[in-house]
Amino acid sequence: MGNRLFVVIPCYNEEEVLPETSRRISEKMRALISAGKIAENSRVVLVNDGSKDRTWEIICGLHKKDSLFSGVNLSRNRGHQNALLAGLLTVKDLADMTISMDADLQDDINAIDEMVDKYLSGCDVVYGVRSSREKDTFFKRFTAESFYRLIRNLGGEVVFNHADYRLLSRRALDALSQYGETNLFLRGIIPMLGFKSDIVTYERGERFAGESKYPLKKMLAFAVEGITSLSAKPMRLILGLGAIMLLFGLISLIISIAGGSSAAFNFMTFSIWAVGGLILISLGVVGEYVGKIYLETKKRPRFIVESFLHED
Ligand code: UDP
Ligand code: MG
Image (cartoon, protein in one colour):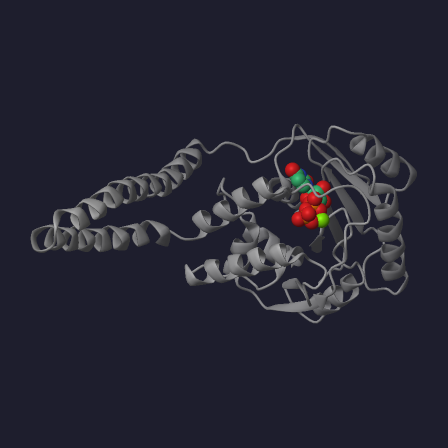
């Protein structure tokens, strides 16, 4: 079992954090190399996800100065999940293990040691799990935790409070590369791979510079993506909803026969709006899946690599 490590970091408009991030990560890598835990030719792969700022120039500069840094330049912005996948798949045949993490170092890089230890003791997948969400706002904490719960109730398999900070062995990454879906939700797919896995807990810090690249709108889109790519249950729930509404219709019939006309009238006007709304929502949910089928049948590439800077 080799121990060449590739740390894969997607970067979108990260010129503010890259100098500091690269400094800290190279310190960590050198320490691991001198401790003999990872191979000397281990690398840090910075994936430029179509940034509009100087991110790619910075990555090129880092690579030129230090062969520890490799760079993958995507042809355009494809979003965090695809950028991460691009990095992972590009180095698939070079790495014995990969660790994915964010550019802003919100994931504590000291957890890398423990991840590597677990890999060396035979784990193929090591999940980084946040020990607490104290630093998050109440809103973020509440929505995130409800999201994990919802996914579980819908039959998806996710690791609670785990985002995309994880170690994958070469075998696990090989398995992942066989999942060709366009609608990719890594967090839900990795647990499906199987293999021996373990978790490492860490304290998640705050972004030390720059702004979050995940505004609420992107977060909601990501949640919908996650749910619909893992489970078809929402469509079945609609069936249940239809049955309940049929019952409502019967009740309104009874009311209008038995009661005075005004109660029935109120109920009628309410029903018209409610039924209309529910039909539209149902159509929307079905449409979401139909849209997914449409995209999957096209089999478009999930990312296009424009260039790969790497010294073996
Ligand atoms: N990111 C990316 N492409 C995007 C948006 C984000 O590669 O379209 C990267 C970003 O550079 C960072 C990681 O995804 O390394 C997580 O983003 P961020 O820290 O902004 O998200 P948050 O921590 O606020 O959820
Ligand atoms: Mg962040």
